[in-house]
Every structure is written in structure tokens, then in C-alpha cells.
Amino acid sequence: MLNIRDILETIHMIDEEHLDIRTVTMGISLLDCTDSDVKKACEKIYDKICRKAENLVKEAELLAEKYGVPIINKRISVTPIALMTAAAADSNDDTLLQYALTMDKAAQSCGVDFIGGYGALVHKGLSAKAKAFLRSIPRALAETEKVCSSVNVGSSKSGINMDAVAIMGEVIHETARLTAGANCIGAAKLVAFCNAVENNPFMAGAFHGVGEGDACINVGVSGPGTVQAALSRHPQADFSQLADIIKRTACKITRVGQLIGEEISQRLDIPFGIVDLSLAPTPARGDSVARILEEMGLPFCGACGTTAALALLNDAVKKGGVMASSRVGGLSGAFIPVTEDAGMIEAAEKGALSIEKLEAMTAVCSVGLDMIVIPGDTRPEVIAAIIADEAAIGMINNKTTAVRLIPAIGKQVGDRLEFGGLLGGGPVMRVSDLSPVDFVRRGGVIPAPIHSLRN
Amino acid sequence: MRAVISVVGKDRTGILAKVSGKCFELNANIVDVTQTILEDLFVMVMLAEIDRINCDYQRFVALFTELAEENGLKIHVMNEDIFNAMHRI
Image 1 (cartoon, each protein chain N blue to C red):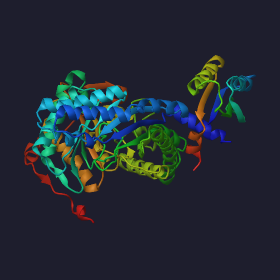
Image 2: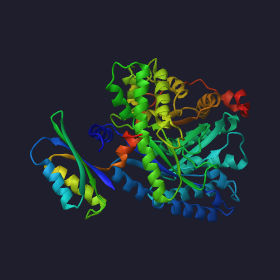
Image 3: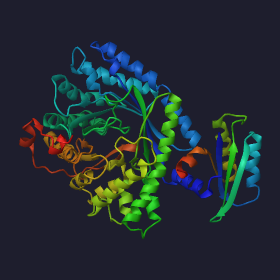
Image 4: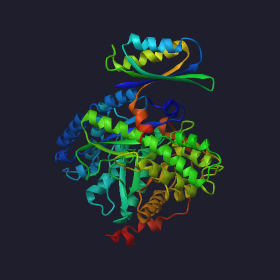
């Protein structure tokens, strides 16, 4: 018989501490859907997505009930669409939009929450078609509901494509402008990456890499509230002990992800990909990564010591999770999306958390500058320069970094932007107004670091 | 398949009878029961074989939720594998 305290611990984690499976994401390869005829390509894409994922939501819901653990999002990721559009006979804006509309329609048919992969891998070069594709992103996000987009602009092996970075500054701004009537939501579904991973189940950056198989199931777990609660029971623990507590908690959380991932892949007859060992916050009370850092003794997330606290947390989550899963991947670590984390929102509102501090934090955590609301009049070249800074951290440190900024059109520092739901909301944060226009305008590639030659 | 039926509530007479009665009604075979008092709360965990229940799993869970609401209890019905996964390596 199971231990009664273990059973109660699990139930308490789910009921009171927001332990959940954040996402079950089905990755689907569209490489066999390529066609120079756009209409035919879109038909093939729609059919394949619907064929593979038609039972995803139903099976996920049955599993959630069977194990009594919530599965918050069901998602689909596909091969970067720029690979599809590269084969298209023409690449005008209306043509490219058809691909996004097809993805959206397929996502609606399958009943999933999001579909990711309207993206491009342009870390080394930018063909004319790829350039046209990047320019198509704002409309694609404005005219669809469930489509997410990601663009890889750099890698540790290839350097940073500054031409792509410059365009992404404009694309992010334009996406926000086109969706200004809907709280600039388009920008929340768009991310620029350095060292993008091919099996990430989390949005907005999920896509199905070209090195992946025909389809797979990737699972993202969550539970910052569980970690915070575990730490709160040990107020006198030193850092080694804290790390140990986090590891043990992460291990338990990950085991749930492994269980769900294995079973759903069996039920759908689709290979199990990875578990992403993540602490993904939501705006709900008690579901915050910032509160974990504060539980360690910081007055607010953003205070001196935050980077060290986050480094400990991120590393311990990975160490605890890696033993609990047969295959670990994705972004694995702590996320720090400002608008999605009640503790970060509060810290930003109180002025304790700045973009500069967040940038430092991204050097030691899972992803990058995430869900940060910036003034609507921030120049595209400033956004591009922020992407370049963030990509540089990723490139030099061999890690994934990303930028998901939301220019709040018509709003200034001191205003707020609200999305609601999992995306939350938050204050407009101050951005340096010194213009890096001459820097961004240079174009070309920032060369890969010396350690890219390691082989 | 075996389900863990956990029951938490204010201690009073008849809780075990009500939950086990519901198991009998639905043809779930109880294979183990543990109970204790934790911080003034009655806590009981029942392990039941549910392969031969006379309704589908969703209905089974819903009926225990109903029983919980009628009696001011918290009842969770969960497949035992989630506990094995989390607490046994």
C-alpha cells in the first residue's frame, strides 16, 4: 500500500500548489507537404495536422481525469513554415498568409490551444524568400487566433545574423501595431531566438525541428508553487539544502510529466519525444517563479542576489528532473515571463525589476527576455539591439536565449497592458532611449565565437 | 486498473461506510484501506480495483465527487500509477 502522506502530498501539490502538466504538444513534420502550388501545399498541411492530432485533445482530457492532474494546454508544433514557403512559386504577402490561415484552421479543427511553427531559421543567412517570410509575420499573427511564430536569428555555431535581427525589430513593432486593438496580443505570440531548440513544447517558440521524426509528443511540466511551498517549509536551510529540496521537488514534478507523456504517446501511437523540465509560472496566486526567489530571502525579485538565486534554482530543477525522465529536452529550466508571473509583475510595478536586471537573469535561466511590455513608441532599432544583446548572451554561453517583447502601442511607462488568462498583464517597463540605429544598420553577421570551432 | 480513493474531512461517524458502500454499489473491489487523523481531519485512503465497475470511469469519478459534496468531504479518485511515479523510484 502506498504511504498515506505521499498520497496527501501529491493531492496537496495539485489542489493547493498548482502542480500541473502545462502542455502536451504534438510535433508534426510537414516536410512531406511541400508543394510549389500553394493551394495544394495548404491542403496537405491541413490534412496532415488534422490526421495526426485529431485525438490529441480528447486523449489528453481522458488522461487528466484518470490521474487527477490538470493538463492545461494542448498544442501542436510544426516544421518551420518558411521551409514550406521556400518551395512556393511566389511569396507575396497574400500567398504567405494562406499558410498561417491553414495552420489556424487546423488548430481550430483539432481544438488545441495554440499551434506553433509559423517561423524561420535564419541564423546564418537570409534568402529573398526568407526575408519576405519574416515580413509576412505581422499579418499572419494579426489575422489568426492560435498561430505562434518564432525566428531563430543566431546560434553558437554560426553567429548572429544582424540583418535578420534588424528586420525582427521592425517585425515585432509592426505585429504590435497591427494588433493594437487587441492589446498588442500579436507580439505575445512572436519570439526571436538564439540557439532555438527543435523539441520545445512551450509557446510562442515551439516548432518541430527538421531533425525530428514524422511526429512526436513533447510534454512541459510546471509547478513553481510546489517548489515555493517546499522551500517555505525550510526557512533555516542553507543553499546546499535549498538546492536539494528543489531537486527532490523537481524530480516528483517531472515524474508526472514522464507518466503522462508515455501514456499519451502510447494511446495516440506517436513516439514520445521529451519532457521539458520547466518551472512555468502563471499570473495565479502561488504559481510564481519570482516568489521562489523571494522565498530564498530576497525582498523582491530583481534585488541584488536575484541572479544567484535564479542560477541555483535553474540548475537544481534540471538536476532533479533529469533522473526522473527517460528523455529530457526543450528549454528545461525556470521561465521568467514578466506578465505571466504575479511576483514579477509586483516587482516591476514597485521598480525593483528592470529590463537590465532581467537581461542578467537570462544568462543563468531557461530562456530570455520574456513577456515584457515596453513603451509603444520604442523604435524598432532599439528592439533589434535588445535582440542582439540577448542573442549574444545565448551565443557566447551556448544556451538558448529569446526575446518576446510587447510594444504597447499608445502606452507609456506607468501605464499597464492586460491580456488576461495565462498571458497575464503588467506595467510598461522603461527601455533605454539612446538610439543604437547606427549599430543596427551595419548589417552582416556577428561571427561565431571561438568555441564554435570545438570539435 | 487500481484507483486510489482519498477522503479528507471532519471526523464523524459513517464516512468509511458511505465510501465503501459507494464502492460496493459500483462494483469496485476494495483491496486496501488506511485511515488516520491528521490535524483534526479524518483522512482515509482506499485502494480499489475498478476493472469491473458497472459504469465508465468518468461516471465513477463524478459519483464520488457527488458523494463528497453531499457529505462535506473532499474525495479524489486517481489512478494509483501517479503516486507510484512520484514517490517510488
